[in-house]
Length: 420
Image 1 (cartoon, helix red, strand yellow):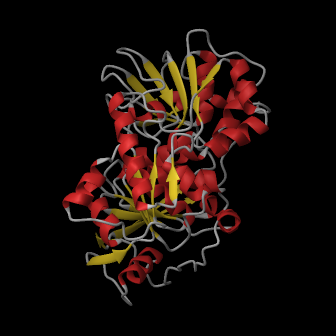
Image 2 (image 1 turned 45 degrees about the horizontal axis):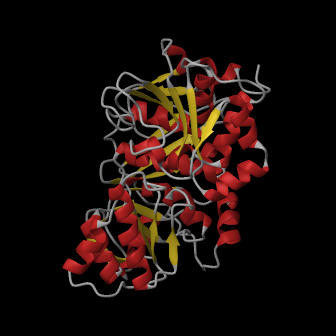
Image 3 (image 1 turned 90 degrees about the vertical axis):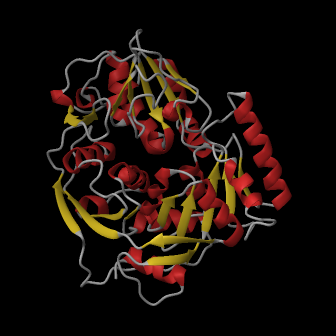
């Protein structure tokens, strides 16, 4: 069996599972974001009275933080009431950040666990060796009642990534390149294991970027064997006892792909598809009205640091606005302690409350018709960040910062501090 199958087998109380089998699995931790008030209504409609475990369920207010509308404020109000009534021990309000960042920070993610959340980018937690996946409101309601959910054991594909990136190229460029080569439907209801010499050396933040965007390939979940950096991160934040599952040597993958990244250039996904990817040197000069660094894909300290390395001591284009939203309050405080916030504000950046912000077109920087945005977030379909008549380009935080500096889509390698 694969490590992923061993996770499912353990959660289902079985010695072995097979591809295509339907299993009923116990959930180790569940999260509901502030879009999904419906989970509470469904919980009661299904006869729910008490959640299955008040220590294993949390609400995270990230998509509308702070509440930009009366309706979102009402969502928050009702969810806060439910959390208090149920005595939930973990609740992350509008001051916390994006769910996929705050859960690992709070020690709720570890290797071998089943983590389910009302957000498709829950594949992010494969970076920690966890089985993370997203579900809808009614499925989450059944989890809230029973602590269990059914899964179809997915086919598993292997994506091996080898080599070392050149300065100015980031993990976001790697996953965009893979998406461009394999397409957005290569892994529909499959699991992806990312491995190879490049992956083995990645730090936590870069691993999260790659696993986060596995869902853009259709993946049900993603997986990376935890390295020493991941284990050190987890053990510093969690007292949970865990064992890292290992894939059997004779396991047969449904498909395997190999990528060498030594010569990879910065990548850009053109409107309006995440698989419409080209190297930066093939992009015509495109005006940038807004540049965005943030969300669950590009809002960590390392991402903010990449922008600092390009913008330190400079000013962004007078025709461009740069919006930066840290992925969590911890990220914000760390970046502030290092002096990054002041440097970027001096360069002309605008900071907002940790959360999802304009990534889903809700607030804190939505786009008007005809505007162009280069963003470190994860989706660029029409209307994703505001008007359906706006254009969204996906890129790394470094490329975003370069675009803000020049006012047009630009190669970050010539602008990055210390890079010639």
